[in-house]
Length: 108
Image (cartoon, rainbow, N blue to C red; front, side):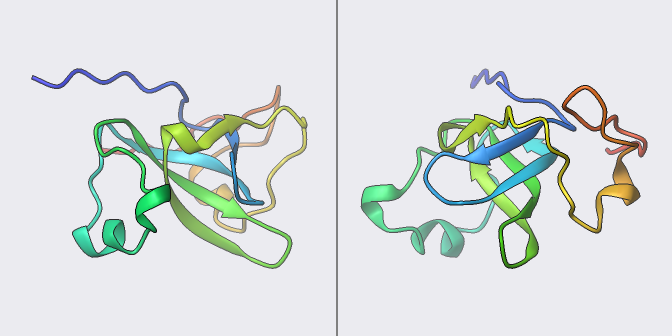
């Protein structure tokens, strides 16, 4: 039986370790739960292990807003203290305070 504990939590602001984007966690998979096609599209030398938590993020970079799916090994906490501007944040979370967003919508 696989036992996995997520390092990050819902509403936490994180950034990608290698790519220039940050986001707010809105869901967590205890291990990889995306398609094989998505996984195969990642260059083999950069492909993360499937046996770790994967996070769904409301993400942003300098150009756009989007939803990202990122392995735990590729995330670091965002300690900037700055809010994220993703337009979908109010649908799930309350106002940014103390470096995170409080969940205001019950997920399954």
